[in-house]
Amino acid sequence: MANRRQFLAGGGAAFASLGLVAPAIAQGAKPRVVVIGGGAGGATAARYIAKDSEGKIAVTLVEENANYQTCFHSNLFLGGFRDYASIQHSYGNLPRQGVNVIRARATVIDRDKKEVVLSNGQRLPYDRCVVSPGIDLRYDSVPGWSKAAEDAMPHAWKPGAQTRLLKRRLDAVPDGGNIIMIAPPNPFRCPPGPYERVSMMAHALKRTGRTRSKIFVIDPKESFSKQGLFQEGWEKHYAGLVEWLGPKIHDGIKSVDPKTNTVVTGFETYRNAALVNVIPAQWAGAIARDSKLANDAGYCPIKPESMQSTMDPNIYVLGDSAIAGDMPKSAFSANSQAKVAANAIRGELTGSRVFPARYTNTCWSLIETDDTVKVGGTFEPKDGKIASVTPFISKTGEPADLRKQTQAENMGWYAGIIADMFG
Amino acid sequence: MPAPLLFSLGAAAALALFGSAVWASTKVKGDRAFGEYLSSECVTCHQISGRVVGGVPAIVGIEAESFVALMESYKNKVRENQVMQTIASKFNDEEIAALAVYFESVKPKR
Image 1: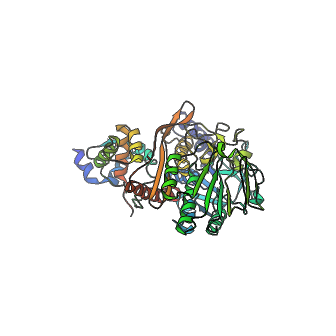
Image 2: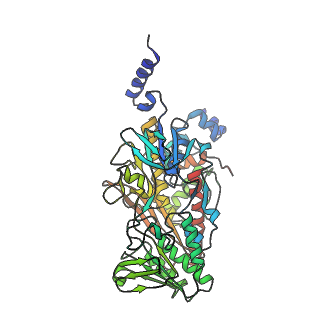
């Protein structure tokens, strides 16, 4: 008489040979997915895998923060268009949707044992792991700047205390005080972000009558996202308040001195700035690099059909950490990638239908009240990368009612993606 | 004759009876499961609950025929909106039908 183990093994083999059930189920265990990072990539992936597998997959989300603070729309907080509470969200809805949320920092992935090691020493075994830690800042990328200097010269490129610090510092800039932004080199999180931030800073200065002040943008790049649209907007709304300097004009960022708020470029030294906002170079979150999922450039190569890591078939990398071809590093991209990965992972673990990868992104940027522009498109796997299929961008000289409508869309999208991430 | 019975059952009951393979709306036939997957592109902005915020309208519970007509109007650039024209232009007839029957089957939870 066959014992239980033999019965399960035999039954499993029979089902597996029909291609109906994946190995983890055939062995009688519920397959396990561990998701690292509860942002636009991770929270979406966790929620979709739990929701669509209807309890057939055990989903655990590892996140070190108690709440999620969105980087997207943090510029609107800076400009006074949103309050801080409105960009803070709870993970409280996820457990009700079948996601086990563990508040801890994932320190490393033991890929041989297929376990995620947490800061509290706990080890979480997985069948598939989703890695979505966002970016880390490269504190050594601007000479003279460091982690110790991030309060004196805030970055506010990872949300939370830094976001609020930058707003306090912006609000304290006296009329006539200069703001210097050091923009980041490619690739970085949120390509239009620095320039929407400049717009929001200029809005705050103008609204409070600080029109003798000036914002200098020292950019290591020759050009930037939506450049024509931003520059048109700055000229229209903030004439004389914003000066953008590309590398040919400043001849390189030589150093900063956080003690004296000095910024030295090849051609100019800016002394006694009222505020210096350093947005440094970036790379994938430490867990991705420490687990050897990144390449020499510090980001993680993936298969464009599924977001599966090219370094490890049991791992999927989403969002800002991944090398996603033509897709920008945005929350919308991460959310879109999460759904492709969730579909693929569920297919592998439960034998559910797997559909071809389809990706979408749109990035809205607020320039001034009711004047919003957008850039976006759809993407598909092609020639080994995620390639742009149908790109679009707002046009210069658009009528005011269209720009106002675009802002309404921006607010609708924000509410939509939050609902899609957290349920 | 099974067809009138099917139509009289309503979306939820018919779904329970016939599963999710191919969903017959009054006139649109589509693969609901495929539509559900494709819908993940839509629900980043259009909330699955049917809740409306800002300038993003609700699309759940729309009759499948109307949904197809709307998508065609974006595809043919009769209706204006860069995001929607871009998204619609990429979908073929089978995909639009799949989306239409899926969204018709979702009840708003407002």
